[in-house]
Image 1 (cartoon, rainbow, N blue to C red):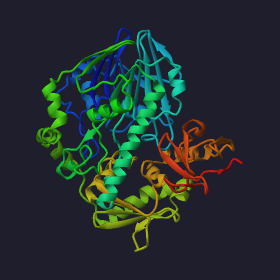
Image 2: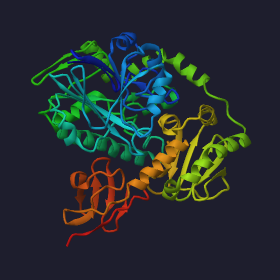
Image 3: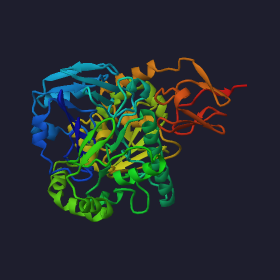
Length: 512
């Protein structure tokens, strides 16, 4: 097995039984905000697109699903390995690009194809990607590979039953807008970013321990930001207020925490040949070039930004002009109010009005009243502010997932009173009746089943209210606070209150 890094989550996996192209991303994403780090634009994308026998796109986020690269460079007669998502949006998008041959998989069920064993573990909760995320397991008879990318599967034990993992590709860096976009004092933003970076590392470490792979490769990140207005988000920021740890920073921290783990630097063009005893690694960069990329990162990124000025200019030119106030309100009312009428659990979960400032126009999404209207001066616990051209573009394109366009762009500011509210985020990523129906039915089907467990002297419900993780495996208690280590959600056991997000309280009492 030979694995070539293509940047970010991109992999080209060569085996005697066929080659798999994974998540080939090169074009700027999220309103021109995200670029792969390091630069991968000089890779021979047409070669990888022609040589692949299979295409695997883990999910629809645009740092994984690069429509332009797929359209231009990937041959359309290969076989697409399709995760078992609840909606067929990924398949529809790929068919629109010209792909016709799909291998529909069942989550967690291996399938053999011409000597290559394949398994895709699909996640289908509202918090997973744009209604879905997935991980890929491959076995060519000699080596077993697990490509986890952004997915956080609950059952690593089941994945390990596929085979003891030789090569493990794990997400390690930030992939969210928190806390950078929040209106917070600099000291608070710095502290929250440090917590977030530590949480990211702890999660990756838990997975590395659980998978027990012979070789580990930090993958699926980080992005970099080449637009001047976003440039200071790069890395950990100017003063530690950002979350985008790079590959070498992660490898150094991993080396301190787990010196026995064989971990390797994977860059665009790096070829890894892992087996049960060793891993041959061939970089296309010299040692001096790697030192410049990571040791003089700001200068490297400034050079990268100069090369990408035409792409940034083209993205800005592609945006729709701002809409007049009345038309803006009419468009949003006609689009969103029918969705709100069906969104019972989302509206109850948000529990109040949320404010969306579109340029100079303040809009309110009144979840209890199920209406969209102009702001009337009332107190709103949640406020998002962004530019009018981005909202107009989302309206013109009928973007059904604003997390996959606006929010991940980080071209907005946010404030909130109280904890994070997942239901508000879910609404912004479910702006179609298909998605709203799915999410509402998902919440209906995931009611607590009544099972309890005893954990460190407390009787608590077995399933985490967030994404149903088994707390007998992922729960940790310190004092009277329970943490679900899968995603870091915290609960006050004395009251049952969720400390991370409203509307996710837990059942808990002393075991004695």
